[in-house]
Picture 1 (cartoon, rainbow, N blue to C red):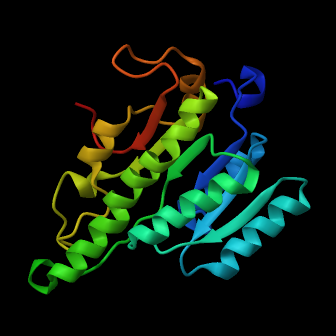
Picture 2: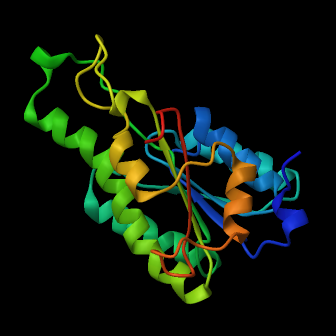
Length: 209
């Protein structure tokens, strides 16, 4: 069995999970809280679900808050990063889980839809990482987890906009497949080409290059 954060004596204590109110994001929130981390649950329109998650974690003795932001807007991304750092004095783990899945095909895709999809699925993860990385550097530790899937590498009949730009996410981060692997990565030596404070990981169903 892979070691948990508690057995690794990890310095990681606070996580921001985008799209953390529903589906996979919610499962990641629950897993991080189960490892003893304080969790900031980001949501856009799922306010009731976010508050339900937060209430459940608090009822079990965990620490969690919900924060809303429209990741298609850069000013909202910047506000989310600032608010997340202000809650408990910093973010040690950033999980870029939020994404949109427009069903339109090529002939129905206009410039606005394309820009919105890339803003949420690509620009937001990149800029959240950029905004939170200085704090991770100051504290000497940090983990960024980017979720990616095959929609970023191949075309699907039902959609022409990528639900997750996997190639870019893969170049930003490495690819351990589980949260326990992320815990191991947080303790391991950083690659020589990265600063020593940087710890990087991603879950990605796409084949690694």
